[in-house]
Length: 414
Length: 147
Ligand SMILES: Cc1cc2nc3c(=O)[nH]c(=O)nc-3n(C[C@H](O)[C@H](O)[C@H](O)COP(=O)(O)OP(=O)(O)OC[C@H]3O[C@@H](n4cnc5c(N)ncnc54)[C@H](O)[C@@H]3O)c2cc1C
Ligand code: SF4
Ligand code: SF4
Image 1 (spheres, helix red, strand yellow):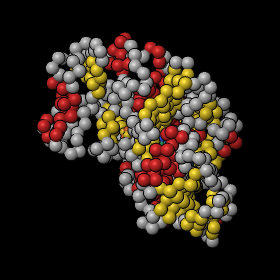
Image 2 (tube, rainbow over the protein chains, first blue to last red):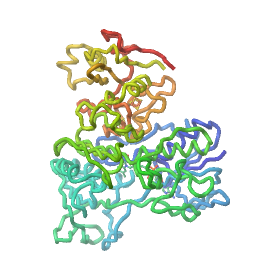
Image 3 (spheres, helix red, strand yellow):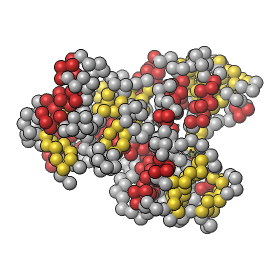
Image 4 (cartoon, chains in turn brown, orange):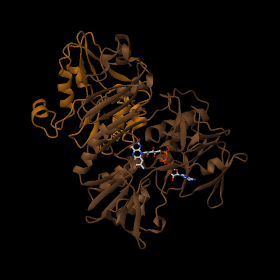
């Protein structure tokens, strides 16, 4: 058997490890346009802040490919997939045949059409290690950083750059930070924490133009505010890398559509990770769930299906742990919707918000106090009726004691 | 593998397991220094839950397919394929708490003092036998292979 994986990140590693659990002999080839040994993408901001070294960026040890007996083709972009001939064509013209293919190409940063942005040499996106390495060259104690977008990636860039640069300004169209994952109550303490650490926000406003020669020297906001700029980071959104797959007949909306075993509509072509729209098991809807653990689990699920091996894969749903300057945040599931009840507790700085539908926990936002959050995640994934619990979700001492005796003892004896 | 099992009928909820867990995970290995002097303050990796009728002390279950490991964004959390032990490489852990979000038992302890790392039961590899089991005054914790 000959397995080929395009992409070399979380989903690819999940697939490699899943394949090797079931098949120690098959040939596995990994193709990636990035040159690096598999690294942890979420750590690029930690690298800039100086809290993670180059050596510790790796997601698996240096001997990973060797141990897993994987052939790597790093620094090569896949430009075409031929689903009939079952082959992938690389940029240099070489072709690589496959029996089963995993598309784990992730996403690319979307850069909006602002006047002249493409011509500038101090404009970056923030998805890749190489971007972090390029940004690093322009950063010193006086560097003025402007970040457009206060989503997860924009704020991570701000957190990474604030300690090592002169100033960091974040411009965001929405009226709050992390608008996609937090409500006002959750967003306020995050913004406050970041401001305390030297980040300046311009919310509810857009960057209209950048004033330039061959580099951006200042960013002008819609209300005329001018912000001086040495480094501009564009973090307004990402687009799944679906082009090669779609050209091969793979169906996609924004992301590639996959079933619960990560199969696409084309035989022997699978997809996993940020490039996919998969079923959110809490809602039953297809959606992009661009998070590291999901990518790993989906890659592994694809591997088991490729090998026709038994696998109890519960599926995935959005869940994210993220923190800024020591303030931890956990979000999972849906944040609002019809017929949903909200239970909340806590003050602004530390708050818990639970979203309940028909006696089932379907979402949560925890800010500040995230201890034992996995028990709530378990309630969500197992769809345990909350009325069977002996404690309220908002109770301070919520724990396994809340479960019925039989269930509790089963858990304790696992 | 051998794991620590809690028997809620016998647990007094006294928390002595916490005392010895903390001591075992200290630098000084001294019960007084570990609790009153050592900086950063070592952390116990047990959760003693007390109820009206029963109590229990819970720690990592060293799951067969550990959700903390598949979730870990850095690769710091790993399960040893030979011993089954799930441990965190604290040099590589960045304290993102993705494992806290993923562990269905709520077993992971956030250690903010010791450089913001995920702390968890390691079955006391250092001393050979889990200290919580050794010191439980009512035999409510057992170290057994039940597989
Ligand atoms: C700054 C930042 C912080 C983050 N923080 C978190 C976090 O705290 N928690 C969390 O859960 N998630 C976080 N994420 C998201 C997480 O990194 C992604 O969910 C994860 O990387 C997805 O993995 P993947 O395998 O699907 O694809 P990716 O990691 O996107 O990798 C895809 C790879 O495929 C390559 N590729 C694409 N097209 C081709 C082609 N045609 N030929 C060859 N190679 C190709 C790409 O270059 C890339 O190397 C963060 C992301 C960023 C950018
Ligand atoms: S920390 Fe939690 S998920 Fe990880 S092995 Fe222990 S009990 Fe299982
Ligand atoms: S807190 Fe540490 S061990 Fe847990 S997921 Fe993050 S990096 Fe991994």
